[in-house]
Amino acid sequence: METASVQSATAFATDAPYTPSEVLVEQRQLIRAVSALNATDLFGADRELSFAVDRESRRIVVRIVDRNTSEVIQEIPPKYVLRMAEDLRHANGSP
Image (cartoon, rainbow, N blue to C red; front, side, top):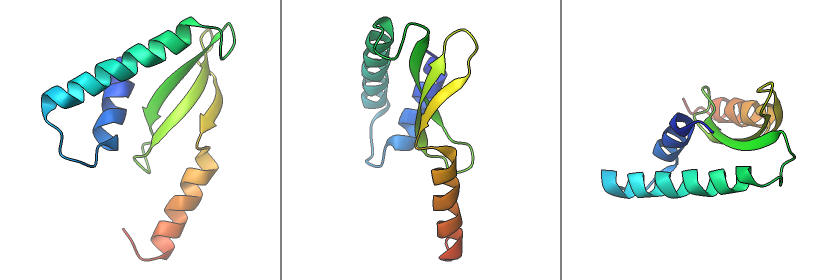
């Protein structure tokens, strides 16, 4: 699992003012939790859970990825949902 993705995801997810040490603690806890999940075969033998930030919407997405090919098996929320939300936001006059 990429820790850079987790760090970026945590930075975008925080609405309340956090101190840098609190953010670091949250990042470490999230990394440990995801690593523990990935150590099991919960998602399949060759799959892992990862977090990323969608470039356009800047929202956190959860992905199940094939470890061998890096192919995204499933993404939550799906890209089409993120694009629909973005279109609705623009239709309502928000930047």
